[in-house]
Length: 139
Image (cartoon, rainbow, N blue to C red; front, top):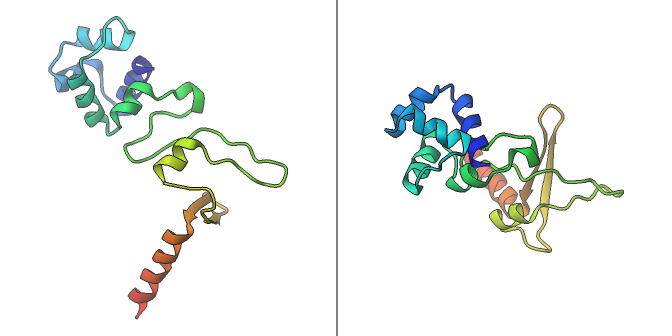
């Protein structure tokens, strides 16, 4: 995963091996070894790579692009994978999403839709806070 993520992120950012190696203060050959899996960078270099690409260290090392069909997401953005819509239109929110957004059983979510951009879920509490802020701005 790391090797594939490194190659993908380097190319997405329009960097050659030489350019990225220079930013890391390593040789192009060393970077090539990272990309082929022949060697792995130390934790400090991994942190540096994550900062260069604007991704989390965890996603740089562990993100499985094959599972989602998507590239490593930017820091703070998430791709939780696919969900299946049940017969009655229900979906199961992935555990990682529930944990990150602190979604508990019984919580109420607002479903918003834009025909051009898709669906969005917001917690009822956050949605109501947003409405209140719009009201106070209009006064």
